[in-house]
Image (cartoon, rainbow, N blue to C red; front, side, top):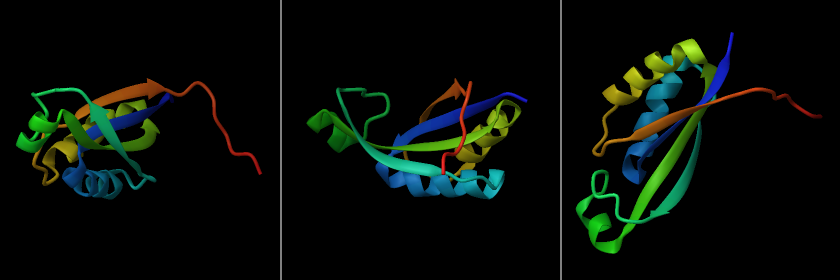
Length: 99
């Protein structure tokens, strides 16, 4: 079974709702980190962000089986959010835990 890291980039105010939706749907650990995106991506920007040219975003990440990506995206789509989100997957070729 191939595994991927799914990362969703969403508005800062939407991060908690998207992360909770993924956690509740997948029952897997979900990671969040705040990011500042410099630039003018007007398609995803709120009004204040368009003026400032800085997007306040949260990256929400979860490691899961590749066959569950569609399920995860459906859960994130249905989450209560204000702005659109972008997403990407990256294949995991190796990993582990060192003690």
